[in-house]
Amino acid sequence: MSVSPLSPLEDIKTGSRFLRGTIAKELENPVTGAIPEADTKLLKFHGSYMQDDRDIRDERRKQKLEPAYAFMVRARLPGGVISADQWLVLDELARRYATRGLRITTRQTFQWHGILKRNLRAFMQGIHDARATTIAACGDVNRQVISSVNPHLSSQHALTQQWVQRLSDHFLPRTSAYAEIWLGGEQVGEAVDEEPIYGNDSAYLPRKFKIGIAIPPTNDCDVFANDLGLVAIIENGELRGFNVAVGGGMGATAGDPSTYPRLGTLIGFTRPENVIAVAEAVVTLQRDHGDRKERRHARLKYTVDRLGVDWFREQVGLRSGVPLEPLRPYRFEGNGDRYGWSRGEDGRWHLGLYIASGRLWDQDGPRLQTGMREIARILKGEFRLTCNQNLVIANVDEADRAAIDALVEAYGLDGYKAQSGIRRHHIACVALPTCGLAMAESERYAPVLLPKLEALLDTHGLRDAPILLRLSGCPNGCSRPYLGEIALVGRALGRYDLRLGADFIGERLNVVYRENITEAEILSSLDALFGQYARDRIADEGFGDFLVRAGVIQADARGPHIAAPDRKAGAA
Image (cartoon, rainbow, N blue to C red; front, side):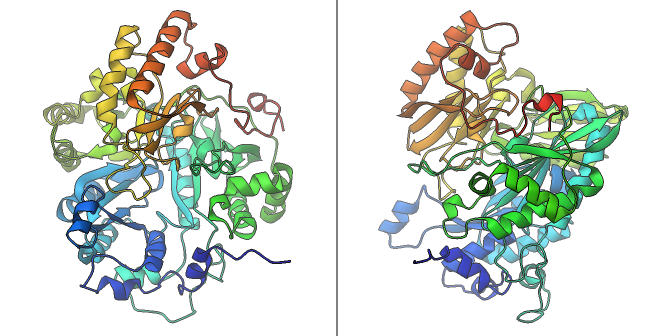
């Protein structure tokens, strides 16, 4: 019987000499702005993607020029916490080397676009100088570890942030290739590196792996969208441990029904002292049993579905040496971010700012990037990026509020004061012109679409209704579109699937309502549904919940994936 070959990327990884490839040599090649395809796959492990400007791709082809290649770089900033000094360095790098400013991602970090190959090494060195890194921000490894950001619960954030940092550090690749290529380190030889977690055959994981920690009652990080989701159980100011969910993931492939979004399955509870061992067991199970033949099926969600939840739970206990305990009770009450000033339990102040699609840039509007730079120069606290592409100016003294307020107003950062409910809760991926996977507009479409949606909502008296809107240029799901009460998933330029019916707390997937439709059809469909919602909703009922109750859609049978009869009752 024939055996299916491994994915070609597996050979690239195993032959890379622990992620070296020929990256260092190709960075010095002045003939092209690109690097070879095999090296682009390895470059992701170092935190960078090669891209080109798709707006001018055809014109350059007509001129017989190579595409306008440049690189996107993503930092690894566990929990999205950044000091004021770090902000200033990262901002300076954006102004010196990148295009389109700073961008907050849906995984609580910064990414930069438009960095030319000749500047890539200097850029990476600059990230290092800011006491940060880009290693494992992309690639088949555990990536950025995310967490809830709730200004009211500052003490609880502190309890969990230490575990965010420890998990991030624990799963960093051990290869010295990063230091050699970017930081001027000396080559240490052909085979002296070791990867005790990712495998000494240097194959790393079958696909990317994501970890998130949520702090109830807020699920602002969409914890069930992660390969490994941890729900913090905090009682009387003490972190008791985490409910563990496995197998979440947003990605799907257009036209392939064997791929699908999935919510993580809660499989048990673990105490803080055991969380690293449990997390490593989950990661190594995926390393050893994930699909290395078909990358479309290589995420942990497919491994869990193929091998079974019960088997997976048992194996986690065996590998970690710590059997999981019954789930602990908890409750989520909402998604999204808080805006404006909030006073934490410790008396210090936190200012939540709305940043449209996470883009901090001075172009064509308020000088957001400059304004944040001026705030960083006087801030004595720190910044926290959110998974909804916004940010919090955190740990501010009462005496410093007025100075920050003045800068927020002067530079147009006070837009959170007058935004509609749907605008305050929207997320959009980058999409065109830089993302090579994009099939339709997303970030650039949001400011076009939102006023039209707001006009419809105004007609029905719903302007302030909080509605989760997710825009995605393709089915891969970087903006977590399958968890939107309303989501547009790109199919082609100007055409989207309209998906409806997720809940407001990240515990139910949406479903396709209409496929491959135009803006006019989208607006017509939503106008009718907004009218029905305004007329027939009950008190405090979310838009997605209404659509399910009214029978407009059927809740997705795949979600939520909960391996317990009643999670809120703490059943095993």
